[in-house]
Image 1 (cartoon, rainbow, N blue to C red):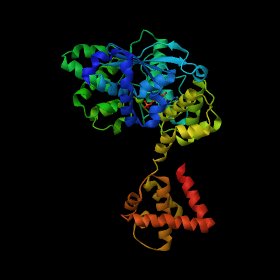
Image 2 (image 1 turned 135 degrees about the horizontal axis):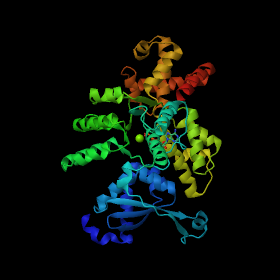
Image 3 (image 1 turned 90 degrees about the vertical axis):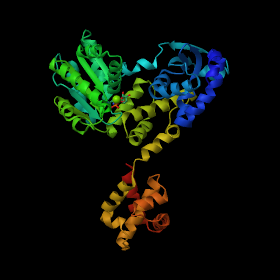
Image 4 (image 1 turned 180 degrees about the vertical axis):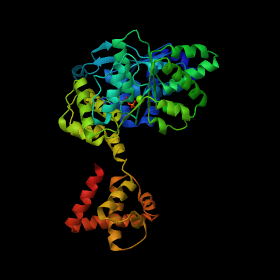
Length: 459
Ligand code: ADP
Ligand code: MG
């Protein structure tokens, strides 16, 4: 591939490579994601080591950089190794012109703040402020703790340790603290970085025998924030350095804020003394989202993007996409991007259509075990009986119901389901499915029991 490089600086040739890179991206992300996000991009030019692209809207640009930037770069590099960064510019295309005017599109450059992938790690996201953070039961404690730390002149809780599952707002809260301090006390030195980047810089300093300035850099800060500290689990030398940096800062009355996906005591492969030191200050967890919080987030985001989203679409999304806020936000962005690009209104139909893959993966979280448990509760049978080969009628029926529900509510195959029922054959499962369908057709009361069970599992 390399031989092509020298002549490939012209846009024409870049464009001929684009379909090939696209194939790789389709393969990696699937047709739907490709169509919604990557296809709308346009290749501009190769300027030295930087490949310039344009996106139709600000949020397509942001979304691509945040989610697919690295892979996009990776696949381009496979064809053109000299590419080191991607820059995406927003190029507005007026919808009516592109519809009426055929090829003669009127376009105007909206903003031209190029973003270099390399610097993104430690940069603060301008949207991650306290004002933009929607507070609800699951995150009110973490929010209050973060706000207190941001507002206090000297460390109140040191360290502040935020933890919770992915996409629940840990990074958002950390950035919000940083923005707040920058605004109120611009002279204070605030450093925010991921634990990975900390580790990377430390290892680099070791390699270049430059650990003195590495240490200096961190020990002169007023507020140090390290995101996702679970990443240094198992990295002994980094942990050691981290521990020293951390102690030095706390001893000098500087604020340290950290986040992780687990509580300090649950962090794996982390040294005991580091764990206990991490738990010294205030530990605040962010719980999984509730329906109310998800709905609140959707309303806030739609308002911020200045788009009208019908109530039933919001409710549908809040109900269906329960995994985390990042995914919820992603779903909304996708719908908005889609309707903007095709110039239609947002409806429940388009939503279901555009998000088919996402909705399916959210459904998939129901396991055969969950179903078995619920069925046992419902019919008051023991799990051991349900999984046994006993043929008593009051056990056989619930067992068949559980098999049937496993078939219709999960994506498991018949043999897989059979295995989860004490190693039964797939024909037994098939028989159960047919039997339940037949019985439901004949017996209304039974059918309504099965329906209640099904709905209780779908929530
Ligand atoms: P984490 O660091 O916990 O994995 P992030 O802080 O990156 O999660 O949040 C993921 C996305 O969800 C971000 O875009 C963030 O702005 C958004 N988000 C998370 N929680 C909230 C919230 N309470 N209100 C508004 N947006 C939120
Ligand atoms: Mg994060």
